[in-house]
Image (cartoon, rainbow, N blue to C red; front, side, top):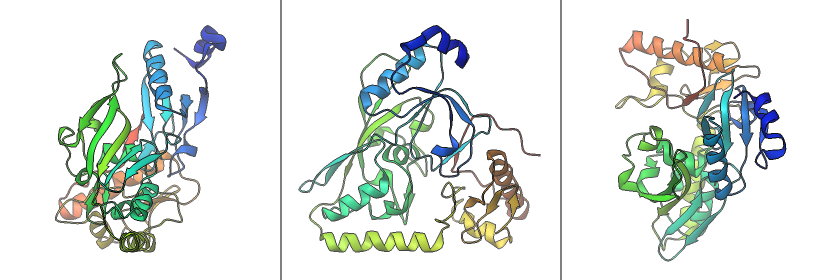
Length: 311
């Protein structure tokens, strides 16, 4: 149903906090993308579940986003309902057992720093990842030799296509692989996650390792410009950034999108980029690497919405 028609039909009956025609460029780290037909930032998991069920009853598609750090959203925007979980923050930890539970919208860097202060080891690698707990679980995010699946105990999810209650999936049931989980294929929404970390460590030592990882990332990656993080998965044993840099592609641009001159596996928004620029530059880099090395680079970034086939 079209936005105006749905407004007319429901009148004042729209769920609290629901907004129409909201620009999604403000909710992605690339700062590109069109508008959401319907948009909401829920304040709690009950609201997430209620909004998802409302969308299903209205025949609307559902998209769930977190910090928007691994997303390329079409310039045409997204139909249906988009839920942004970035307000769903908070965590609880047990310093004795190393168990830490975090809401889906909790920023991964915040969780890593809190764990370090409690003398819990395992998340030092996560301090420089500009994402949320929910996104990290879905993507099996990783850096500095560590990844989410190594420390995840279980995750609480719900099925927006059903009327059942939230349920728990153990880490072993998520089919984790490099930058992959079954949650990328199944329409399950992450509400919270529990991690089992190493307990009883020296907080100062954990904090030093965490800070060193952050310094390493900020000195070698373009943190001062809008990006999505790493664009391509590493085609082991090769590194995507090294393959791209070796071809002299640093600085290559399409419109307002450019391969970073600091790290070749980053594409940055130089100020006026569109999602179509990002998409075309991704395809151009893939083609150059394919021609030179017969290696297919697979994007780590997730595309949402409609994109024209690159020329």
